[in-house]
Each structure stands twice: as structure tokens, then as C-alpha cells.
Length: 204
Image (cartoon, rainbow, N blue to C red; front, side, top):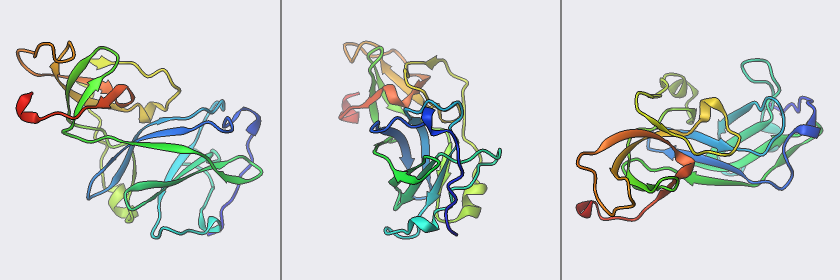
């Protein structure tokens, strides 16, 4: 199907040259975008994701129509082989590729929360913007959002409510490993303020 560049006001849209950041989780079952930073001044920023069946693709095969609410899509994330292949932007007059950075979030890996020197292990993550070669498989996946723990906020960028990036974080230390907690506690932390640490699990 040929793409449709539906018009919208681009004067307050994507800021040229800015890098879109995506926090992603991947496994053998599906690809999951959980958080997104985009420098776009539009009031609404409709996005969608498409899983490609081959590395090389034809731009004419990318359908840039409307989202479920009837708004013209502005961004399309193209995924291939469980990685972001391209980010496309609908500027109204044309469809263009924009620079991006993909940050892979790994469950059961050790992270440091840069805001407050917490150290611990990332546990559960929500199912947010999901893609997979089988559309039926994606539609059968339920959202995995759980927010029963205390939240640690720290994201200073504009992001989407449904892609807030909160992950379940098992706190092992609250002072950058100077001391360890008597017992591990669970909190929700935004993935963009977590930095992966290399550590030997036997020493934690």
C-alpha cells in the first residue's frame, strides 16, 4: 500500500536535527518500546510502529495514514530483527528519515538511578508500543502496566503518557553501594534515569 502523507501544521512540529531517543525491550516473543523522547512542539504527536519483514524496504509501502483517533500520524518507527531500523517523520509535504538513538533496557540487569544513587536490579517492565511480524500475536498481548509501588520521577523531557517508561526496580542500595539495604524493596523508576552497571551478582 502506498504511503499517504496527510497534511498537518509542520511549523510547530519536529525540530530539525534533534535526535529522537527510544527505550526498548526485546525478547524472543515481541519488540516493546516503553519510553520516548522527541523534540516536537505539536500539541498532539501521533506515533505508530511497523515490523518489517525484510531489511530493505520501499518507502512507497509504508502507510502513513491516521491513528485510532483519526489524527494524522507524524512518526513511524520501523523495526526489523528486534531493533529499530528507521524513524520516519511525516512533515506534511514529505516523509523523511530523522536521527534516532535506541537504548536497550534489559530485565534482571543491574542499574544505577542517577538521580539519587540508588543501585539495584531492573525487574518487570510494562508492555507499551509493541511490534512483531504477526499482527494477531500483538493484538493478543495484554498491557503489563503495574504501578503499585512508589514512583521515582526524574524525566525532564517531553514524553507520552502511555510511554512513560516506568520500570519496576529492586533497590539493593540507596547510597551507591556504600551500604546495602537490609531487605530489597521495589519501586518504580523511569528508565531514562537508569544507567546500566556491570556487576557480579555474587557480590551484590
